[in-house]
Image 1 (tube, rainbow, N blue to C red):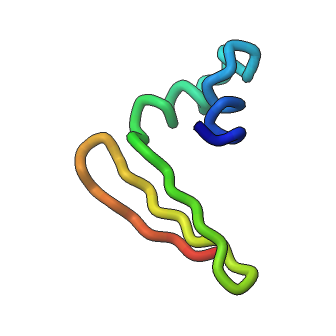
Image 2 (cartoon, rainbow, N blue to C red):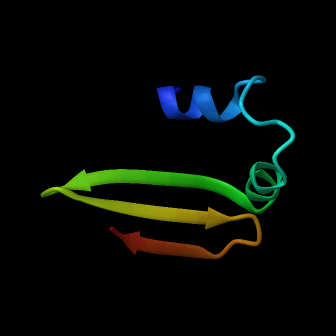
Amino acid sequence: MTSAWRLWRSPGTCQRSGTMRLLRAVLKEIIVTVETGRLHLVLHWQGGITRGLKC
């Protein structure tokens, strides 16, 4: 389990925030990789859709 995942699931992390609850309800998994100074994110949504993003 990564540090980011532990922080995300921590009981003290903004449990009252509607945004956090919404994201937890609609996102199944987020995969982040770093290549050549860029972030690559793969978002796996609960409905089965996968979306890739580069930052």
